[in-house]
Length: 498
Image 1: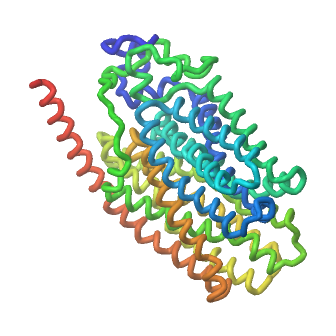
Image 2: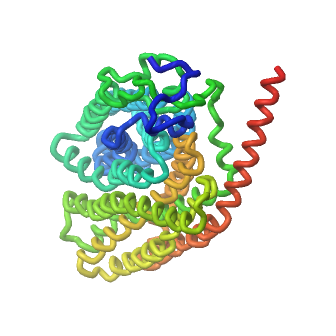
Image 3: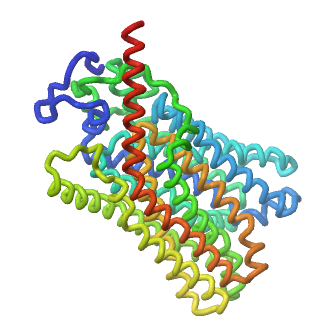
């Protein structure tokens, strides 16, 4: 049982802790990495569940005796729920806890996969409904995982943790079609859903056995954690029960916060726009790989086309890992510069926007050049190695830009890590869905080369937003902090009078 709320921390090496810092010191570095890897595994299922389905669309069209357009409608509905569901589960995990929310989402995913694997081919409507349920379960694991990162990490280490965490969610679009193609070809389309059921069930069991609760308002409440918040095998986070807690633990008055309020924060809106633009360009490239490579390189078959997706996935995997280290290095570099200028600088005055974003304009320029070159390479049908190399570069840059902006969002609202990631997911999914829905029409209208010049221009729109965030972000953040402080003081005054 945790110590009573009135007890201060007795750890002399740590001293009195704020509620935020207390959670971050409850886990060793090794334990934090285990938690990050586990939530990365859980976060893999959102994009994997969406993309593993693509190779089976022609087969499903024949099996259900429906047109390809109607089967594609199940993909559209999945993307819509993929954007909407985290807006519900994010606030739930921010209030009730990461562990129960994550377990319920994985359970919904596992059960829906069983239903999809057994769905009668005469019931197209049931396929549609179950795909929506599947999206409601799988899509929210990313938002919940981002909330865990905000719980356990300090600003100094958050970049590295977030980089590794996004390895799972961002390689799903690359490996999903490969796995789906092999399973559908060798074992039939139902095997895709049995595979997803088994994989998500394994993740669920590991989470129930080992995953500790990380939400501040739960672990520092001064009360014995309920069963749903405790792992069955409590080997991770032993310090939770060793007498470590905040000197001013949460009062228990936390209520679910409306995630839509985050859209009223100007600095958050700017970051949402940056990630949405880059993500839309990324999906514009990804969604057309199959058709464009089949046209440009007729010697490819379904299996080798699926392997072509690995180029972008490999670039994303490398970029996610490297960019996490770069973010941590940049933070330390800016911190040293601040210390040289002023030894009494406060954390609230730290230019976190500059530390996270200052390298992004260069990366966006690189992505824009690669995107335009990629389109013309496919139109001219140059050696296949060239567009694959450009895919690697675009995968690297896109994940670096999105991770940097997403990490900054959690820095700005660490108590609403899941909610802000839900907002991020909503905006990215809607804009990406819009681009994917028209990409073939644009290619048919103006050609492959000019289509990707247009997409490169779309990515360039993020550069002025990056500079605006760096320039105006600190003042916006300061004004919001002062406004929230006045609200808290007013609430405390009203409570004392009552």
